[in-house]
Image 1 (cartoon, rainbow, N blue to C red):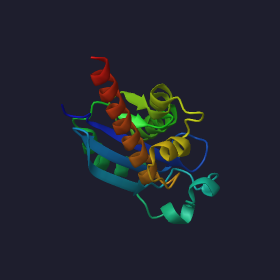
Image 2: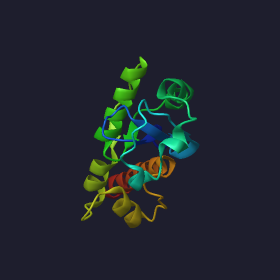
Image 3: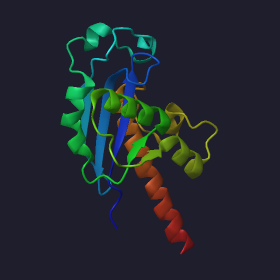
Length: 173
């Protein structure tokens, strides 16, 4: 039996407006195997940075980067054949992707989002389901708030949950 095919995605934003993506990480999984990783800096539409203390990025890091409208068309082919997009606290990443696509005049991907917070809550019933706690429980390396690392962690959470579901199904049947 093959594993899932999906793309894990994580955005970092410069401030509270959802179109302020300054970094994106994508990890493509095909048949349960990580096959591609991409991380891109994005020049947000405004110079204001409120979240530098969280992710370490400043305007100087992204001033020479392409805007979302030029970054996303190079990344979107990674989504071909993916059943869903996975993100930790998926509402945030869905909102950022929608706002950035709308601002750039680009189509929003058709894949549904799967939230790895909810997946972890259902699968492991941990005291905390934040990304760091789930990664610690599963022994997944994490450089939190680095888009590529966060996206890979989400991919590994989905794969670990898939394994648990297979184990439970085989022991029940």
